[in-house]
Length: 370
Image (cartoon, rainbow, N blue to C red; front, side, top):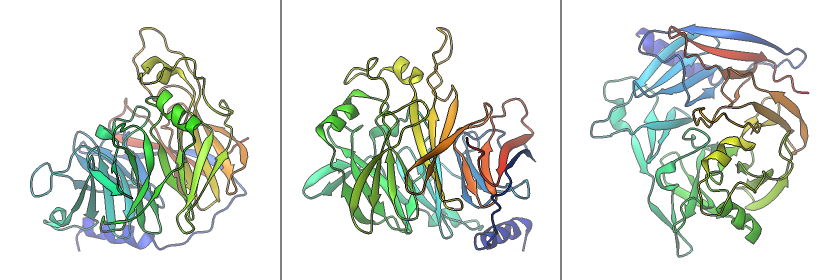
C-alpha cells in the first residue's frame, strides 16, 4: 500500500471515530500547513467534510485538495479533467455521502468516488443543471440560470438523510426560488417541496435582485432556507412535510435590510455592496447550535474595488430551538464560513502573502460569543 492509499485509508477510518468535546475551555490558535507549489495558499471555495479534514477547490490546478487539519499536512489531490468521457467544469462546493464526493459547479453536479486508481474518474456520475423539472404539471428550472452568486461561492449541495438538497426556480424569472428537491446518492430525484410564499415575500424577492438567491443548509432534522435580505428563516421538516418560519434578528438586521436603495428588476451593485446582509446558516451538531453569518453595513471609497466579501462579518449564535444566544466577530483575516469539527471551530485564513503554507484559525471547544 503506497503513501497516498494509506492516507485515504486513515481518512476513511477517522470518519467513524468518536471524541468527547470539552466545553469548559475555549481558546484560539493559529495553524499553518506547509504546502508544495501544486497546492494553493488560499482557497475561497472550501469546506470541511469530515472532522478535522479540509477540502478546497483550487482554480489554477482544477483540483480538489484535501488536508488533515489535526495532523497539519496535505493528504492528496483529486485532479479533475476537462476531457471526455467526463468533463468537469469550473466549480465548486463539495459535500460527501459515505465514500462519494459531490462536486457542484455552475452547470453540473458530479458524484466522484473517493478512491485512488487510474480510472476512478471514469466512474463519475453527472447531474446536469440548467434543465427543467416538472412538478404537478408545472415546469421549473433545476438551478438558477448561470448560477451567478453575488455574495458567496458556488455552494455545496447540503445533505439530509443521505439525500442532497437542491433549489428549483421559477422558469420565467430564474432568480426566484420556488422550492427544493431531493436527490438520492445516485443523483436520482426522490422528492420535492414547493414553498408557499406570501405576496409580500414574493415582492421582496423581486425587489432585492442579487440578494434573493437562497442559502440552504441542513441540520439532523430540518432543511433551512436563508435569504440575505431578511431575518426570516424557512424551516422545512422532510419527514413530516411541514414548513414553518422563524424571524431571528441579527446584530445589525432586525427584520429586513433597508429597501430604499433597491428598485424592482434592477441589479443594484452599490446597494448590494454596502448593505448589511445575512449569509449562510451553519449547523453545529456537536454543540447543538446554529451559526448564522451576518455582514455588517460598510460604505466603500469611490475608487475601491467592488469586492462583495469585504467588510466586517459576525456570527449570530442560535440555539437548537431557534433562540438568539449571542454574537461573535469573525477575525478580519478569516473567511466568513465557520468549519465545524468535534474539538472546535476552524476558520480558513486569507493568505496572499505567503504561498508556502495554508493557514487556519482554530477555536478549541467552540466560539467565544458574548
